[in-house]
Structure formats: C-alpha cells, structure tokens
Image (cartoon, rainbow, N blue to C red; front, side, top):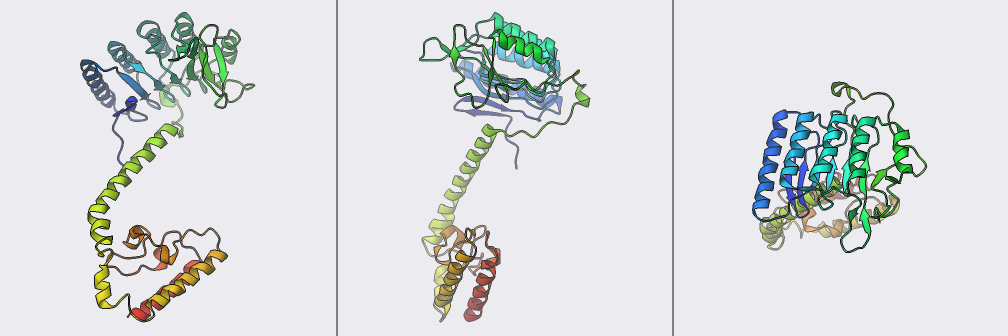
Length: 361
C-alpha cells in the first residue's frame, strides 16, 4: 500500500501524517518547509490557518527540531487542534519547557489546542510542572464554547506511561486544576469560572495515573513503538477505500457494465454463448436447478455459509470479479473458486458444476 502524503488538506484543516516517518533528519526539514509554504499561501489568500491534526508521534525528533516546529507555528499564528506527540522518547523535560513557553507567548484562547497526546514519552516531574504552570498562569483554558455562556472546554490531555510522580498529579487534581477524565465520562465541557483547566485521561475514576518508576531511558535504549489503534486514521482509510471503489465503479460503468452487461458482452460475450448454444443446450438450465437444490440443502446444513445463491449472481460476480462465477472467457468458474464457499456445500456445487460441463461439451 502506498504511503499517504505527509501533508494533506481537508475541510477541517491541514493534517500532518508524520507517525514513524522521520528517521531521516532531512525528511523533517522538508516537511517543515512544505508546511511553511502552505501556511504562507493560506495567509496570503486571507484564510484562517488551522492544523486539525499534527501527528509526529513515535519519532525521535531532536530538541532543535521541536523548537523549529514551535517557532514555525508561532510565526504563522496557527491553531493546532490536536497534537499527537506520543511515543517520542526524545520528548523530555527540555521539550516540555519549550511547549510551556509556546503556551505562554504564542497562544490565545482562540488558538489554544483542544487535545495533546503526550503518553509514552520521557517526561518527569520537571516537565510536568512546566506545563501545569503555563496552563495555570494563562487564561487559555477552558476554551470558550461558541454559542454558550460561561461554558468552555478544558485541555484534553494524555500523559500515561511517563515518569511523573503520581502524588504530584494528584496534587493538581485536589487543587481543581485537573479533572480525572475517562472515555465514558460524557461531555468534555466545564464552567469557565472555577472549572478544571485540564481533562486528564485515566482508566477509571478510582485508578492511578499509569506512571512509570525511575528515570527515562536514553532514546537509543527506549523500547520499540507500540502498535496503536487509530480511530481517525481507520475512518480516513475507509473513506479512501470508498473513493477508490467509486473510481473503479465508474471505470466499470464505462468499459465494463455499460459496455458489457447492458450490451450483453459480459464475461465471454452473451450473444456468442447463445450462437454456440451454450446456454440453450439440453440440460443446461435444469442443471442450474440442481445447483439451486444444492444451495437450498446446503443452506440448511451450514447456516450462515457465505456463498452466492446460483440464480442471484450480480453482474460484477458473473463478469469475473474476485470470487466471481464466470471466467475471463465466459466459462463458468469452479465453485471451489468462489469466495466463501465451504464444505459440504462446496462439494455439492462441485458435482453440479462437473455435470454441467459434461453436458455442454
């Protein structure tokens, strides 16, 4: 499968698909230059620049690369809706201080992020305190909710699997700065006055914060990246597959269904089959009835088996699509070649196919 472009433009904004893709330092520099050019063009055109998804997760970016990114974002006055920086063994306390300074000097409530994913990094007590101080000292959160009065959204934050003393996190919870938030907690909103500024994701209301003990390992000694289920990426992949299918379907309509099924030329040419008598030979259609009977019997024997009923074949299957019943030259494919057919139904259809072939020869 071809790798998706690093930078994509969607109706929601710019998306950066950089997960595990910056093993070469030059690749990051090229991405940053491309991003700068795109943002400059949008600003020149009078557009609001929004990065809806900034995914640099599971990379070993240097402190200088993180700093270059933040300077570029600040210069453009851009809002990043979602930061995905999890699984970066080089995202340490020094980088957290850079992020905290970015919050203090470059952001407003209108450009503050909605989400920050910082799990599985190298953050200790120092880095945690940098971020909490920046959030506490500014009025970025809760971000005001358009159309409502006095209601906003705290920062959705993930910090599990770092090296922060859990007592320090609990201290911020007790002070009201942080609220424990589970994925079943419901609304992320909170009162702007007196409400929490951070929704910190936890497994449950009465669980800990999933922090590791000791000091973070050196980046070269860090464990390999975890496999991560990405709901948004899966949805985008499904959407892309749907687009590909629609494109293929249009092509089939031009050269396949319209030129084949509607004109009678699907498979090995319907008219030629008629001229040869292949479909009118004695016993041909009764044989299909035998297949129908086999299907009915198999349906009772193997409830739920996923195979096509003989007289319910779609044009795409009959035209030789994957798992189809008609070969490239119009000959009927063996039932064993049909996707999803399973014994004993497969054996019954195999016998029916062989008998039909003998009658047509």
